[in-house]
Length: 254
Image 1 (cartoon, rainbow, N blue to C red):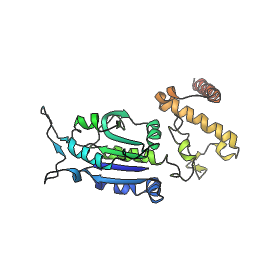
Image 2: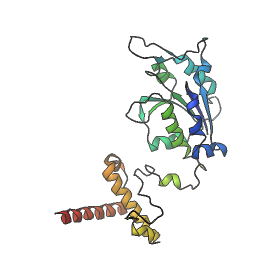
Image 3: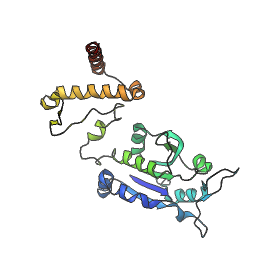
Image 4: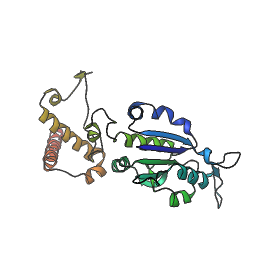
């Protein structure tokens, strides 16, 4: 896969793209990532990428010309069979979720457009980007951090990017549920003990416990995710156990 990033702040990407899983994937040739200064595609001596908004108002709006020229020079659409996506990172886009990351991971080429200031000229969204994505319902300074989020989420799904291929499927959200609690040594710390089942060596019991705790955590913390999860017959049995435990706990408290 190849990923091109268009931004007016290319310097902020270096440490993130050179570290951990993304850095190793680049070194292994699994993904090629290039960060481009959008100013390279400006035509004036001041290298202007923004201007005041039509109709008045505070702040500045990013101009369409640099984005169009940059994307047209970078895109691979002319190559036969190239699966490409031009993504505008902006608050008005669709919400970025694990399913979105899986879809993007199937592409050959991603071009990520980082907005800034008050936003990007609407013609970029309407006539250049193939989709717009938001990483959440909060305000950020620009599209650089969202672009890093997208890159990290997508790259870890590429074959060979993780040390263990099953790792990505075990992560939170991979199956629509939050991940189960994790523990490591020591078995007891400041009086807090690791659940006995994890020390038992019984892999089936451990698997069942992890699934149960994943269901419990998702239902409690993210009921919106839980409502959309596809539950198995075993899941329903585990949920009944959880409800019985809660009823028992309530009786003890009474």
